[in-house]
Amino acid sequence: MALDLTRSAAFSTSFIEWLRGKGPILIVTHDHPDPDALAAAYALRHLILMKIGQMATIAFEGVVGRSENRVMVRELEIETVSLGALDPREFAVICMVDAQPGAGNTSLPPNCPVDLVIDHHPLREITGACRWVDVRSDYGAAATILFEYLMAHNLSIATKLATILFYAIESETQGLGREWSSADREAYRSLLPLCNSRILYRITHPSLPCGYFAKVNTALESARIYDVVLVFNLGSVDHPEIVAEMADFLLRAEGVEVVLGIGEFAGEGILSLRSSDHSANIGDLIQKITAGYGSSGGHGLIAGGQIQPLPRDAADRANLEAELVRRLLVALGRESVPPRPLLTD
Ligand SMILES: [Mn+2]
Image (cartoon, rainbow, N blue to C red; front, top):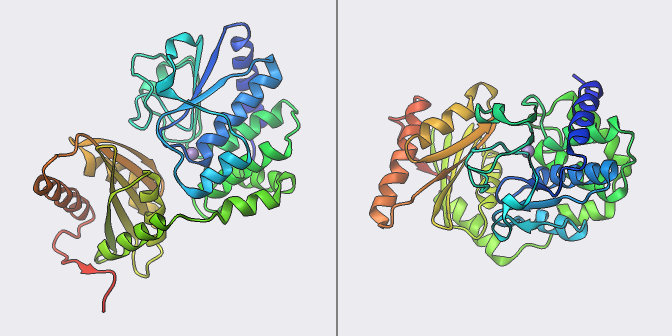
C-alpha cells in the first residue's frame, strides 16, 4: 500500500472545516515523547496554521530525554508546553497524536474529551467515541499520516518540517528496517531531498553525558539470558526512553530474540519489550506481563508498559521483578531455563 492521499484528503479536509472558528486548539501527545510523537504534533500544528490561520498549542507530560531528541527539539525549535502547566478545559478542541485516549501513556485527565485522534497503534475501544479518528495500525509512523495530509493539501514542506518528519520516520522504523509500510517508504523518500543533512547529522550524532555510559554499563552488567530471552534492569533512570533505547541495543545480541528492559522513573516501573520475531505478538505478551500491575501498549515488534504503584520495599520490588520475568518466560515456554549472564569473564 502506497500513500493514501484520497483518504487523507477526505479526512483532513473534513476535520479542518469542523475546526474552523471553534476556539483554542490543544494538541496532546504521549508522555516522554519520541521523534514520531513530536513530528506528528508539529506537522498537525503546521497544517492547522496553514489552513485556518490559527496557532495550536502542543503539550505533553514528562521529558524529552534521549540526547538525539533533545538536539532535534533544540535545532528545529519545536515549541511545546507542559500538560501540567495548562488547563485542558480552556481549549475548545483537543487533538491527540501518536497516542490514544486512556492508553496509559498520556497524562491527559480521563474526563477530558478528545475530539481528534491521529495514530498508528492498534485502535482502542475508547477511541471509537471520539469525533474524528484516523488510526492506521499498518503504518510505521504517525508522521507518515501527517505527511499525507500535507501532500493532500498541496502544502509545501520547508526544510525544518521536512527534517522533523524525516527523522521521525527514520527513527521510528530504524531506517525502514522495522515495521514500515510502503506509505512510510514513500514519505521517507520524498522527504529525504528536502532535509537539512547538517542538522540530521547533529541529531544522529549528539554528544552524550557520562551518565549515559553508566547506564549502558548497568544494562550490560545486569543482563541475564534465558535461552533466546534477555532481561536487564537499569534501576532508577533520569528519562524513561533510555530503557527502550537499551532494549533496542541488546536485541542485537547474538541468539537473542526477545528483550525485556526494566527501569524506574518518578516512582513508576518502566518496561520495554522488544522482539525480532514477527510471530511473537508482543502487544499480547506485554499485557500478560503487566496484568494487574499497570498498563501497557504495543504493536508488532515493540511494546512498553508502566507499573504503578511500585512497592516501596526493596525486597517487594525484587519479588515483583521476579514475577514479571516469570510471566514472560512462562508465556514464551521458557520458564525452566536457568539464566546466564550476558557478560562472562
Ligand atoms: Mn509513533
